[in-house]
Length: 236
Image (tube, rainbow, N blue to C red):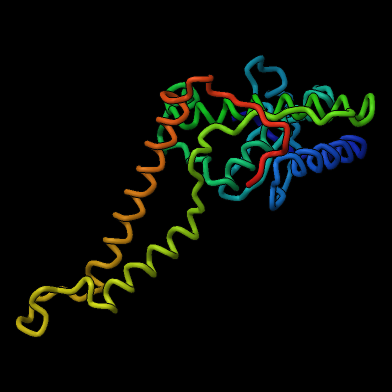
């Protein structure tokens, strides 16, 4: 990693970032802003032709932007890209990179490759729309937006877990799921012995099923091509 120094962005840059985020949030329906945007100064990174431009941390929802020797337009474009990753994280479609995986995750992991495709597609076209609106004023007709990838089924992970836990508790309380030899032997399983395991297996099965359905819908059954346009903003 290059040597990094936190840096204050210029006031003009900060104002444009705020304007761009407002535009992206409005058109994508983002519910909550990233927790923090950090500007980083690194001459070593700037001297590297393959240096970093920015990244998003899905655990902290923070965005880091490298700004040394970069035009504001380039920084803003990177910001738009990372905001799309934040949007993906909010939608529950941004999966974590496996520990120890290679730098080729965007080539080797089908889901993360789609996330990068989506970030370049939405980030760049919305950035262009925002630029043109600032240059020439609001368009008379709202531009179309492509449909997000993997949007056959959407999943709220926290709600799914809560509902699954309650479902398993109901199975036990209503005696739909019981230990067969209860009251007869001392070796019977207590509900706590199997409830957590069942919740985990149900969650894994549902998530895997959704992945299979979405993969099939986007890559196999889309006769008109993978990208469809809509004249309205994306509704969550």
